[in-house]
Image (cartoon, rainbow, N blue to C red):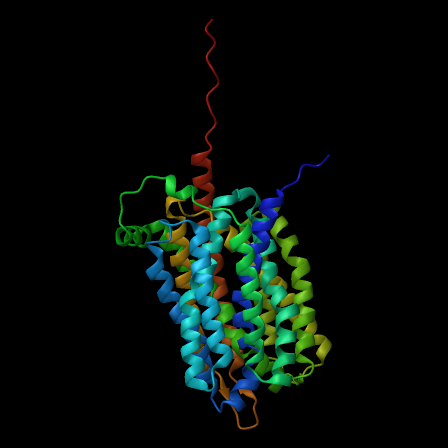
Length: 418
């Protein structure tokens, strides 16, 4: 009989981490496709909409840095619940925001708490699962991204069209409350890291983590990893509608079909990254994504089936990059630094993503007829960032290989008494 890879409790933990990630990603994904609705309704420019998206990223990055020094000093379950509670409050404010300025403030509050959740989730995964199976775990967690498209975006757009743009955030609050209650009742404390002696205070812990060369290399790679999604995604719906000729009624189907295929490929990519090699899968995914981005960002009016096919292939490449790189980066920090490393890494991702979104908002120009110009320029910037990231991730791959070999050294054969 084949031995199970995960126990029932481990399956529960994976499911809860995936749901937490689903709601955090959905919060971002719900806002991105609403761009085509929000810009005319709130009478804002692409640059202002980019700032709404960036406000979350900048506040998330700042809070991650502030929390990093304390991340390894508390039970990870308690930290998860504290920041998830704040995330629910911030999302509630988004659900009742009456105008652009209040929405901006609500996004800042949501980012302060939501930006730390991914780092806590990845620290939990690193604590509970061996590197040999983390690709599989990340593959399932990555389903949160696809699920947010399959379930969240079409439903969010549907409710936004019927009841206004506030309604998707109300839906999200309901999902978060249920998930939070399940974590409170069924998740066990995650505090093994607290048994590792540490004499450093939170500030020293933060400085030590930031200043370590091996960690800095990982943070630099994360900076460029965030560029692609944050540059293209916020304006993807407006580009699809105004440039590619996709209607608002067809938009949910576009996200749903792409998401269904991403849900299928996510676990497979995770399994392959454990078997074939995490860096190998990352490189393949990057090459696929670069080719499709180069084609996609230069399209004009295009038949729906071609847009669907390109989106499916592009997101398969993006998923391969995210799953493999996330699994590889979890192997970089020492056990006593995991929480701090993940918090800083998440902050770097959020801040660099916020800068990328802001720059994208300055590059993209919306003409009076709604068409976006210079979207192809964004594509070229993303491709350049991916090329550099392939090289940077290779150095991290080499470091992890050396680290694993130094930890697992072959023991000398016992000497015979004769």
